[in-house]
Length: 144
Image 1 (tube, rainbow, N blue to C red):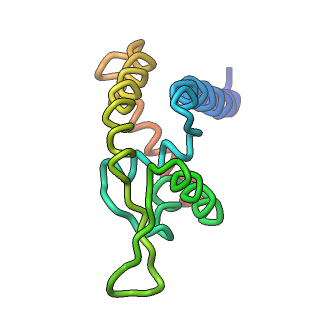
Image 2 (tube, helix red, strand yellow):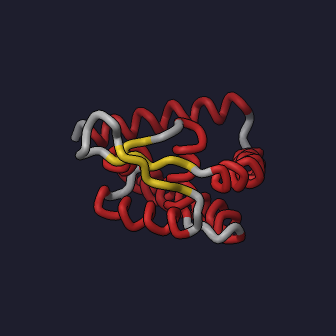
């Protein structure tokens, strides 16, 4: 196969693998009544603490227009609450609730286990090489 065909194949394999990994991960979230975006917001708040709602989209790579809807759904489920910024009326924070923390305490270890299972076909060195290679491709794509 020539160089151009290898690059096209790499692109296709990357997209298919990414979708398959996301689908495998999504199955576990759905069991908990969460879609992948809700899980991503909860995971961010669980690990990084309170976040300005306006900044969440950039952190988890979804459109900022979708964040309000996702936060609304998490508020309805009593997993997140909104909190006004005391110093800037324009800013509202998303805050994980105790119920949200308890849920993540239970499901995050299962998520980690699933990810470990998915990547178990690779050696530690292969994982590091994959990370490095994907970073290179991602940075190059961003600079295009």
